[in-house]
Length: 478
Image (cartoon, rainbow, N blue to C red; front, side, top):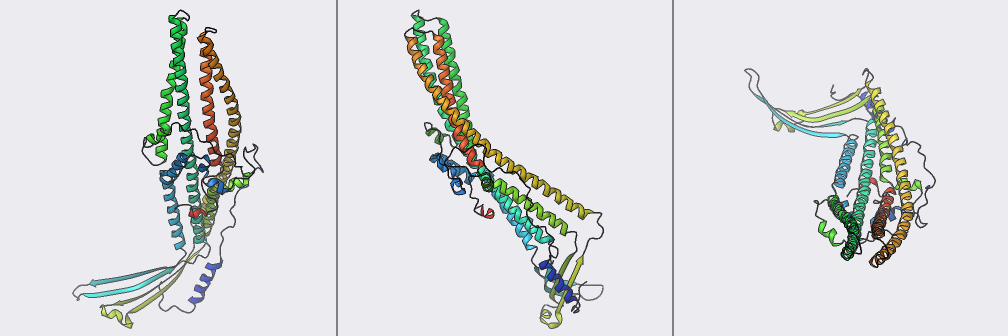
């Protein structure tokens, strides 16, 4: 209950509570990160130079492709994509919640004023005027509020890491879509070029059939071959339109908005990156990846919530006071007799709650274990991403070299076959076989070249490229 002019015996208790609030804490120390096996080096050697890839080299990796259109699309996607804006809003929310937790450690001060007119029975009406200040403070003796603040700080770090992870994924997705689009444009050109050659062969076959030098079977086979090649054109055009729509949506635009711009560069080659980047050691890569940092922050937050739940099982203290004026008239508020003050010190402790407080601790401990397992899964997935990207790079490079040799031989064979068929030296089946082989190898070369370029993008993403790990996570959002 409020105490007018508190006795001196109350002051030592208040001082003790204030002292305990500054030095007592039961929050466990450390991050409690689980032990996760991390190899000393990658099992597949990196096909790059000897200098390790640092964060500065990976921050704007899309510029290494030397394609202004690719750079512009990635930058536009990072600025306008809905996923980035959503992650930025989540980070702002986490920061606001952290400020709410921080405010709980400070005293609260409020002001109030009121005017009341009352009448009872036959007595005359009278007025009452009040004005004053109220203050309250809960000393954080056992660290409950400080643990809540630590959890909120970790949530901010996790939200910032999530924003960085969205940026990394979005940049890679935009680049892969653009590379696929250029690859499809090149494959469409190959299909049309082969179709023109097959139509020329069909015309020669018809002339030979009219002259009695070829059969109608040869003509029908030539027609079937050219129509099969022509059927690939609309399928490639459909994939091209879908890739253009995906790029438009990734950059925050309506589908079809980029069609004219992308069609204007239809003759551009598939962008290939510079080959002077080396992969860092596994431990360094894990420090560069935002998803690993975010998983670590989630473990920190879970650990702080365990400490918060444990502190809630202990007594809580509160201090409050008020200073005000009360009088029957407004002018009476200025008199000394109108002053009133009160001071209240309280303590509350859970006695019987049916085990709810202990159960809440177990709930948070289970959440901590889940976060620890999630951290292990994130680390293992990160290592797998890099290994997969390195394997794909190595094998696609070898595959491309083989296919290029095959395509060169197929081109020579096609030229010889058409010349000899025109001279009546070979049958038409040989011409069909060489044309099919030429189209298949040329298309495979272009598809593999596209995959190789996309493999570089996936490697940059697996290395955590697209953001700067040195910058504080809290400053990741503009």
